[in-house]
Amino acid sequence: MSEILVLVDHADGAARKPALELLTLARCLGTPSAVLLGAGDAAASIAAQLGEYGAQKVYSANAGEFGDYLVVPKVDALEQIAQRACPAAILVTSSAEGKEIAARLALRLGSGLITDAVDVEAGENGPVATQSVFAATFTVRSSVTRGTPVITVKPNTTSPEPASAAGTLEEVTVAFSEAATGTTVVSRTARKTSNRPELTEAAIVVSGGRGVGSAESFSVIEALADSLDAAVGASRAAVDAGWYPHSNQVGQTGKTVSPQLYIANGISGAIQHRAGMQTSKTIVAVNKDPEAPIFDLVDFGVIGDLFETLPQLTTEITARKG
Ligand code: FAD
Image 1 (cartoon, rainbow, N blue to C red):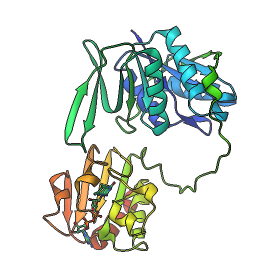
Image 2: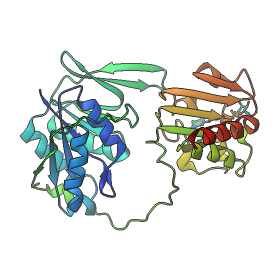
Image 3: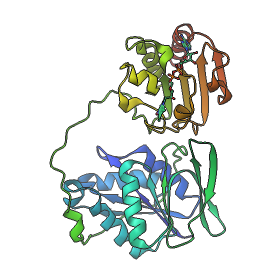
Image 4: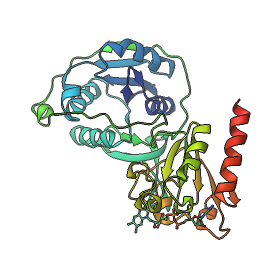
């Protein structure tokens, strides 16, 4: 079977969930090999983790350049590994960094690039990617016709499924290009974090809109989110009102999420909001207006006041977990 390269996103000595999702998808296309850059002493333990999710090989490169400069050192590494391995496809997570790496890599390899795929499957002439475009009003299936397909895949496209493989660690030495050190990281400031999952990677997102009414009332949204180990999202109306940070905005001018479950509360379902959540697997809405456009989109809808519905839901979920 042909080799499929997967660029591994990792943090704190472990592969992040989107990388395990990519390995799961890669198994439908061929034999997955992981590319692990700058993992340092954690390389062996991350390789073991990647092996549990189907990576036959783990190409590992360590160098200060991966941390000290922006994306080009990673592009250099991937390019050199791709030239050696001649893979049938290269999968990268659809983050801002992932998409920049993928675009630069595709250019260098003279290959076609597909970004923001929500599914990838094997086709007669290579991988076929599915994208949801124009504010999720069209679904497009496409495949690369030139070079090695480079495809970025959105988090939560699939659930990571373990499948034991060798996970053989192969050390790689990278020859960095002159461009690699062109942009230096001069400082890093840790972002304020909650204990909640990252919005774009969360399996469940609970969002609040103008119907929540105030910043304080977002505690109702947060309580439900915490009972489900979910991330909190917000509509632009809620963000513009100053009730929740812009980093949590879902939609055309916010983040795009594609969780297994999206619960929209007090959100009307404007096209610009839908653009950021329409590819969620299951959509639930709580809205007191039965005519709200969000109900055209949902799998389950509750016509009711969120301040009555959500506390009951939170209590019930907490009780069932206990
Ligand atoms: P509303 O449309 O006011 O809806 C509030 C809903 O809450 C209503 O349906 C109401 O029935 C319900 N409600 C009220 N009280 C309760 C209650 N107690 N219980 C239950 N339901 C209740 N929007 C985004 O979200 N994300 C974006 O990224 C985004 N980008 C945009 C970009 C552009 C260029 C433009 C022009 C607009 C953008 N918007 C975006 C704004 C978008 O058009 C809508 O204005 C916005 O999504 C509305 O937010 P909302 O649904 O929270 O508010």
